[in-house]
Amino acid sequence: MSVEFTVVSIGALSSNPFWNEPAGLRTAHATTTLVRDAGRLILVDPSLPAAALAARLFERTGLKANQITDVFCTTLRPTHHRSIELFESARWLCHEPELAAHREHLKGLAGSSQRLEQKLEESVAADLQLLERFEPAPEKLTPSVHLFPLPGPANGSAGLLLAGMMLTVIIAGDAAVTSDHVLAGRVWEGCADAEAAMESLREILEIADIIVCGHDNYMLVPTGLVGPAGLRPR
Image (cartoon, rainbow, N blue to C red; front, side, top):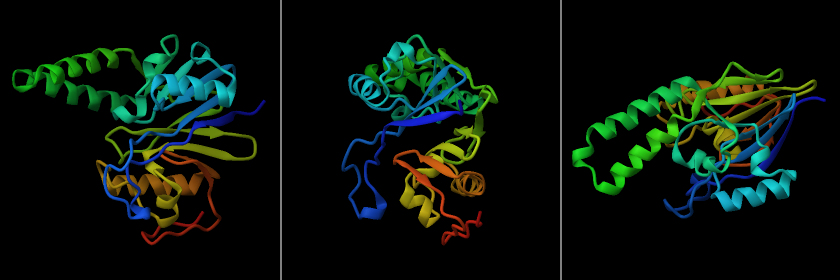
């Protein structure tokens, strides 16, 4: 059987620039996707609160949290792993450069602990402990699921490339934040490096037939898509 994916929960932005919304209108959450291949059940970006995600996972896939074998985070921004502790029996994976960058960030905060409020200090310590559970993602998670580095949205952000028999799917995280961004040739406004993010978006469009967006549903890539930022056609 070929690799399969199911969107468990469609993400949303706190405000969508294409809808002329004010900032902070809603709670942001990332798109959560289940990938099935070679006996592995890989959940990408567990973002909803734990109770909500457990219910949605069962509704969309018939699975319980303890059946998930692997959790992959496209970035370690808190929005993308809000309920990861629900998957205690799974292997937690992230791109190694993202793990290293996040670890240095947290250690830097911890080093300033005397200037931190107690609650923040406890939060940093908890995040460092949580980080110890993560493993660097291998280049191939399964025979058909490949790590796909997508720098720009975060220092070490990465997606997954699903190599099917007929179609190539990229679970892009914040490198393709919504379908509106993709069609307009725009990257996420909160990117760590906008130029690198634009190159990552170009690469996605050259390779993917289907994109699972970071805060939106999945989309088919139109043939010959060229955005105002000069995205190359497929």
